[in-house]
Picture: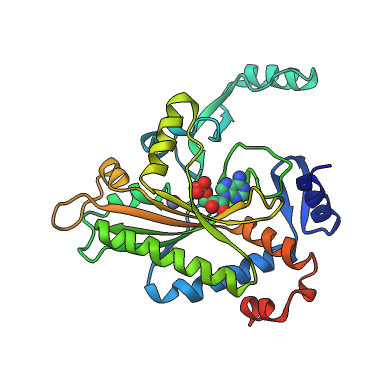
Length: 302
Ligand code: AMP
Ligand code: ZN
């Protein structure tokens, strides 16, 4: 058995994650959720004074926005679209017949106006663009959403539906790159406070196909993405638990996000993988939070 399967089985046995029969789709226990809530309060303690505007979107987004975002160009393999039955009574009868016969019943399932949110910040850019120009001092947002990515795996740290807490900054290049650096420093301090050994390294997104390789190399060469890595199921291949992304003016140009002086806004986002952080804590400190080191418990629960 691999380390990943062993850890997943231990989490199931301890009741922290609940098996649904689908890899990467799990229930969570109250204890697991309590760790996530405590860690989110720690995030608030580090970031709260910045005065970010909190917005919560549901885990589905407007399909038109999703199409404009270009997600299908870069990550078609990860996307999850919502389909619904749109047929008549006859179609319904044939659907039920197919189900009875264990045949494909999805023929009459038609795409709806909703796509599962792939990253917490995706619904934000068009929403803010609609408000008009961004103040010269920039804008800061606090988001949290369940996100979907079609990447079934036995690795408990690679889920299909997981939560991302994000801060998103819009402004000048200097402003948003400083924001990103601030959170890299804070990320290191936060993980130290909860007793996790980490490193930060340059990274790339899993762009699809051969053209995607070039995009990934470009992203690395320009230091556009960094990740905070924590060993969970492997020490040689540690898991990205936070991401620090600088989009230059790409999202600003795409969505028409302008500053008051008419220049295109630069944007950056910082994402916490909440399940991954909880899993790192359970892996390093044990499956029973009562036995966690006192300083870690104090940092999380006061
Ligand atoms: P990304 O947009 O890929 O940089 O993701 C932001 C953060 O979400 C990452 O740093 C991870 O902590 C977390 N994350 C990404 N993919 C997954 C996944 N499949 N399961 C759990 N957490 C994830
Ligand atoms: Zn983001």
